[in-house]
Length: 290
Image 1 (cartoon, helix red, strand yellow):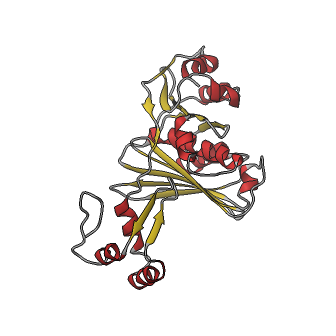
Image 2 (spheres, helix red, strand yellow):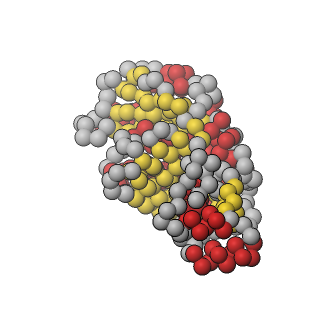
Image 3 (spheres, helix red, strand yellow):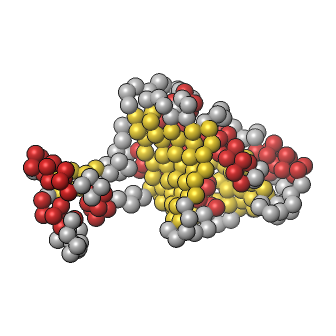
């Protein structure tokens, strides 16, 4: 993979079709660094990270895009998210053993895929599709066809250490011929997973579409970034309630909060909790609350 931790948009000059290709290497490593996930979970989370990196190319606002897969087995939740800066992070919630080499539907029986778009200013949107496809890519294709009426091709690949993705779509409100779309999506379907993981973007584009007039835009970087902070962690404690927090302090002496994405730890004492419920509590430059 010679285009790691980047996304690049693809434009077909003579067709009403757009595309984007992504590759993630250090990003995956950073996301998984502080987690002891089974290899099959890292593989699926890698695909989800590749998926949100592809979908970030459609973000035209400041905000978050969240992809979740939920089920009723030992894997309770798989989630990846991104924002307009291509900052990504991911998490898995497990209970008990997870079978090696399990498929997505086996990991998440009776599952569903949820795509949430949260603009910083504007209305929150959420789309849900059953986890009925053979893999995550097929679920996303079904989402775009059913929710946005956009013919879409998605391919995702991950080996647990690196991940990559390719997405092609008919341009909204354009009149691309059905024959064009069938030809392009058929060519894309000949791409093997190992090629998607290993080929650089120029070679991949030539491998698939050398008879088409298409080009790659300048790449955008993708990186793991966790948005947790001491202030946010303290603010989240307010949901627990004042009485329960003081009871916990009485028993433990301190309250420990860990970020589930990066495993960073924050500790709070009685002074912090008192300030949390005081209208005059502010943060100083050392990130302590007074």
